[in-house]
Image (cartoon, rainbow, N blue to C red):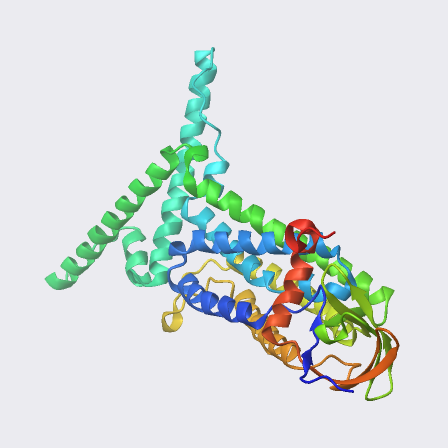
Length: 408
């Protein structure tokens, strides 16, 4: 006897992120990365919101899977490399925009000194430190303007060079040009000085830039911490087993299937799940073992690139814009992030479109109702629906009856 139509075989409690979600991530990240390159300050809150969302998803995955090697597809945090780069960019550039490091070095305001002599001394020390910090801040900002092309480096140097008399034989136009440059650049510097003074007058704990930088720093540390935890668990998974057993389910197996025979003469016991209303078999997790090893390598590379981008943004103090692109950006994590999304998209489509290793399209199944009977059937790939079910089962399995419903 045979079944009338093919039945899909879907993963149980694990699957790669469904390709439709990967496509949505790519659609969101492409314009976001472009804006991060040219006008990063307009999307910093969006970047932080996306990072919080990704962290929430992976924290839930960690909780549900408990880092089970057979469910590596659900808990491998490969896309967090994008969030690490965006948080580095927000944290460092916001701190620079608000002159936070210079302001943190200054003593906090205190108006409650009982001893007026001590209070006056502290006030003079604070004024001196503020004056030095403001002078350095203005100089840094004016130099960044010169480097970014808003003013030429030659004009900046001319405006800040020691005054020297114009030679007598110089024509009037040369005199006017030099005077104009000096007055224009001095005016820009004075405007910049006023902006810096306003920053230094503002209470640090009431400055929104301070809290944005702190939150971005904490999110970056959380991302890196989660990557390190996943790396250690992946290494443990590689060492523990060669091929974890993976549960695959099909409606064809329920409710009376007992044994399944494949076209290459492999036998599998069918386990009936009354709560899910489906029968399942266990296949060797060849793909899962490969992805455990790939996760180890990918997370090591991710951490190296994140450290490199952090050092690059902090140490490379330039706003040069060759061909209109600003150099001071986390290029490594942005490019690597898109490479990860591209790889996930390719393999998630392949995973949903093909049967797993260890099974054949044509199978024979022993069905035991009143007496054992042999049926012939055809198995098909899980498709997007099967991938969605498998991924959600793995992600939300810890919710128990809230997710699966009450069973009697």
